[in-house]
Length: 126
Image (cartoon, rainbow, N blue to C red; front, side, top):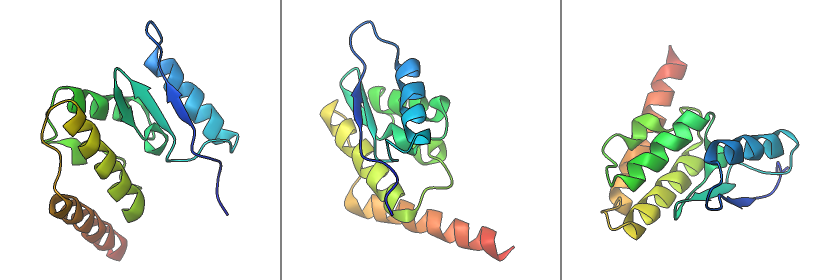
């Protein structure tokens, strides 16, 4: 069974991205929005519904805007499924390329997903 729908929100000029994130989370709580739901802010669209906190979302947004993806994996929620993680990494890569930076290669994305799966398997064995 699917929880909600993919809802795409946009922060208009003069709008508040944190308020928009809070509204998206409220829509998720009501079962209207899902984890693929996105927020477009300053020309960058990210699947904000997958983030647990505004801080996580905004740090990834800032990393894309600053054209520095070096620590982006450390900013993503730990509880993402491999499919959701791959989807977010692809979104980050696309948006990074839109702002004129280098995105991730498919091999890099596969490697990051495999590393996360390995870490989760190790944690579950403990």
